[in-house]
Length: 194
Image (cartoon, rainbow, N blue to C red; front, side):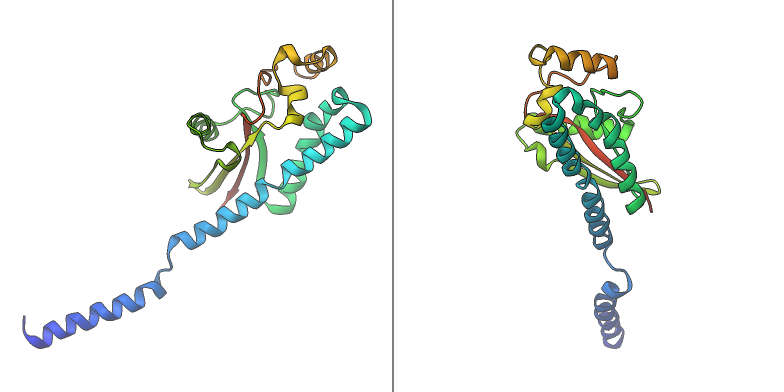
């Protein structure tokens, strides 16, 4: 290769090094934005649900608060979905409501991974996963059991007779008891077409 050819190649490499970042922006910038959006949507429901539960427990007791999770939470999720364009739901490996809370294969894999990671010492509150799956962006965030949740999700032998009766009435196939504070109860799952 002669000197002119060598200089031409060096110039082309230099121009490419400058131009490529402007021609093809890094994919992670877009991924970061969609992850932030998914995280924001997913973290909208739990605080609203906790406030509604606390209000109902103060007003009428823990037994009367069961319909908050059963009826109000899906309505709240529906409102958030309408406002944001993201589908949002709660799912668990130990579902209380088979009609709504059964995870699909992707959610199941994330829940199982979260359980392993929490058992290895990771903080459940920080566990999340977001990724592009086909033509959607999917995101899940762990829902650790809070002390308030133990009224209905704690060890069966510690549930009040009234709670046991109400759970039996509302959820005859209930598998969502036996938890202790901090364990992963399930996840908030959000998804959106790209």
